[in-house]
Length: 375
Image 1 (cartoon, one colour):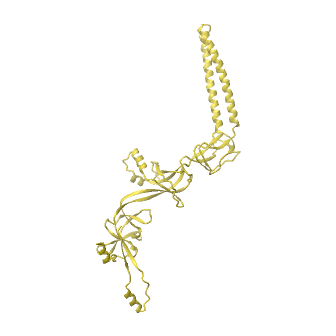
Image 2 (tube, rainbow, N blue to C red; image 1 turned 60 degrees about the vertical axis):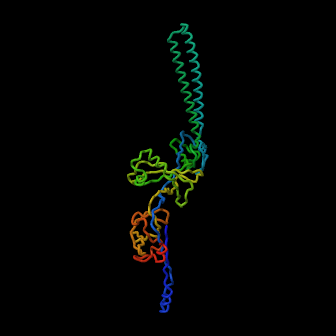
Image 3 (tube, helix red, strand yellow; image 1 turned 60 degrees about the horizontal axis):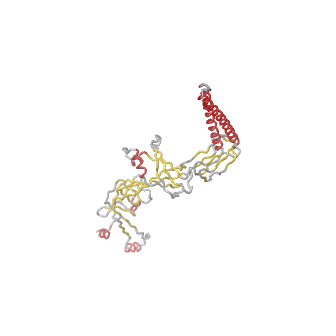
């Protein structure tokens, strides 16, 4: 970037002359201008989207059996691991059901054994022509019914064991315990919500992107496979908290809803962030920042732009070293110091960057010694 500057100072003779006339003159204030030659460059523009965090495996914890809540083994906000016991429901009825099922199974096994002996006995007698085919078939059917009864009894035992297991509620994922609206001694049912477990090892930042942005990033002719590849090639994104703190781990955009919201004209999107230290929680709001590459664009300092009501002007230096105002349109770069010029300037134009607010139309901003130095 080429920069030139000068200082314009009241001459000492003029100051002395004005003093001799008894005039109250202001102190000398040097003023200077800097210029640059317009070029094209590449820049990453941060696109910002309001987002809300949600655990990728948020689970609503509800009991699968009815009974009295005997123990609450966790606290709200506690970090738990997968398989850790959270709640215990009164298991006495479940144990009685299991004992009854096991007794029924033993009875069914005894009946099966008796039916088997009778069938095998009739089979031997039938081969010796002592009993009829009817008696053999009847004993065989009785044996098969006994076998079916054993299968049913085994299923009842398994079901009773499962119900007994339901009395101890464990964490299905690693995460953080949410609000616990129940207390020890409460009667709970499968309709009762015990808590929400936020599986926070990976967090999703949910946000919306405009349809126009998606169309600009993914052309209409791409297949589903091409779109998936395009998403995989998107740069990593950053999550910024409401207080301006930047989360240290980068994330990636992993999904778009594929359906445009008719009311807002936007698509839902998700970016996943690793959360190894458990610093992120469901419900946190912030901003997802996506660096968007802009290639071959004119970038100039914000100080070069003079705002006049609804217009933006830049002072271009003509060949005779005087400045003339040109109207430009700009886009924000997001870095707080530069803007992208979308119209009004061309490559090779020389513009005033520092001191643009003090320039007047037709004012000389380059001087002979400066022009000579350029040559």
